[in-house]
Amino acid sequence: MANEKASDRQGEEPLEKYSVFSTANKWCIVAMVSYAAWFSTLTSFIYYPAIHQLAQTFAVSIDKINLTITSYMAMATVAPTLLGDAADVLGRRPVYMLALSLYMGANIAIVLSNSYAALVGLRVLQALAISGKLTIQIGSWFTQHS
Image (cartoon, rainbow, N blue to C red; front, side, top):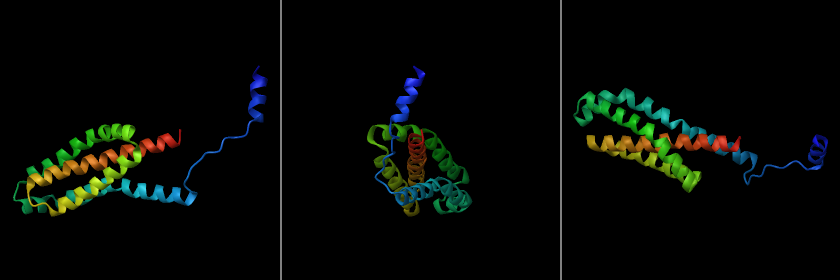
């Protein structure tokens, strides 16, 4: 019986993996997604050295500016669950593009913000967008390589 199964498998043609993207397109997609994944780390490296300057600009204490970091980290713990579920329901590409667009929009709005309350809210939006995006990337990678 084992010999019959082995002989049946030998007669079959190997399945080809299908993709509408060429090899060059796949490498471009990997490069763009990798570049986008770097944004989360970049945000921290830009924000932390500017804490004293932000406190002066918004006329608040450093403790209040530290609250923006805490709120960012709190949302960053919840965001992967929210965006991961949305990606399962709506699809990865639309949610990924929405998250990346929200992140870019939040960054621009943070630069233009004039109040401390806006800064806190936009930091939460920034964390929601960028932290959830990483979950979608990892989910896509594991789906393709399993």
